[in-house]
Image (cartoon, rainbow, N blue to C red):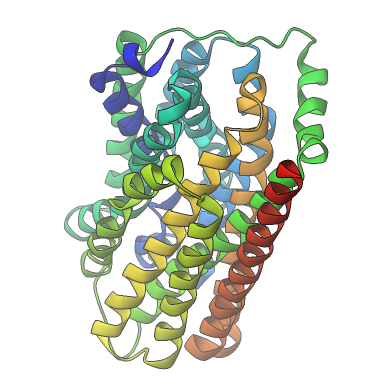
Length: 397
């Protein structure tokens, strides 16, 4: 099936599915204070819950997402969304940290459904419009990540944090029905069995040097992203600001403005050099991190830093995906899985590094960590750009 037979309604369903699903990883971040209070501890005491979901997603990406190259992606997606709905309702009923931790991990595993949708969209798109289509679907992912903070902050402030998960459980169930009624079936071509499928997923990193470089770059930018949003919650809820969860969540509006630039980066990836664009978007990430480190007491500067960091991360990621899906059309799910394991695993490390730096030195140490991740991303993007230029020269000689 080509882009001409992929309707706008189907693209919208894909974007909604990725957005509402990925949001479940991040609902906890702006409401850690309320979750901690209900379990008799502080926000920092439950600060590892988002990291558990991120690690769970990395597990789901490795063990579940490659199945998209072997099974019907539509059926796999419906099953994952239905199970996710049940886990979210269970999270709303959790009564202690232990059960909340276990359910957070399960939620993360099932939200790997997002990574079934993205390669599905890439496979259905015409090659000349792959960046555009992936950019549109990925916009849903970004809006979900960022909008989750607004939704959870507002619901927790006016109702309870449990209602955040209860409502999301209902949404996941509705998404399962919507996917069943709207998206086409798409069976994978892999026929060598599940063990061989997992082994092949690992081998994708050995097959493609470009995949290794893009995975490292994606990991660095997402670690910076997660580090920033973790420490931003701590600083805005602490002395100097004392923001409630709904006001913290409003920072997501700023970031959503940045998320809407994702299709522009996708179209640019179709028309020109995505590698050159990556150096520019990584530079924006570094500028945002530097602004947050230098002037942390200004709301205006934090707003600017939020926008720059999110545009930098989103632009880099869309260009990464546009390059990934040029590698091997028969292994989209496995290539995507190999990349996303590193991507979300690094996000969990970024979340944990931000929380630990905050505990041992507050905002100064935390922003040093943020800047280190940003510098690493900038260096990797520059190296990748140079490697791509050398490869292009070698092909023409």
